[in-house]
Image (tube, rainbow, N blue to C red; front, side, top):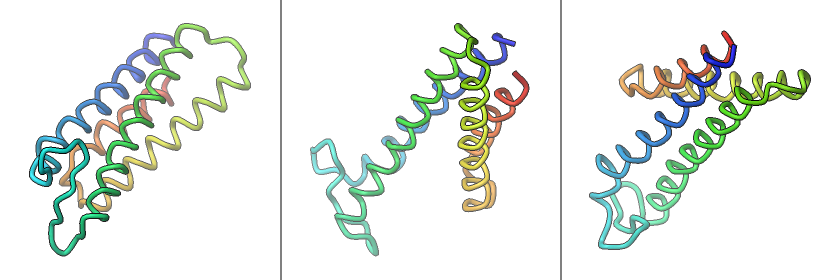
Length: 126
């Protein structure tokens, strides 16, 4: 069902963009001294810890955007059943695993788990 796969791809892109924007607004803007990469420490974290957290934060966004594009491509050219199955299963695993990590680590307080679970469910249904 291409329509469901398109919805999964669009949702993956939206969750990824919202993740980066809200992270910058709610977390990282307070740790900047005018540079792109946050450089101010936030005890008990040192400057180097903040920098890797920032990189990892946006790495998750890059992965989400990449998967979103793959899902949209699968919706437009659903040829190659074995490859399609592999990519779909990888997407389900990545988004479901991410959803569970966020759900468990934040006791459900971070809403990102809902969007990630939604992408996994839509890919599974397609």
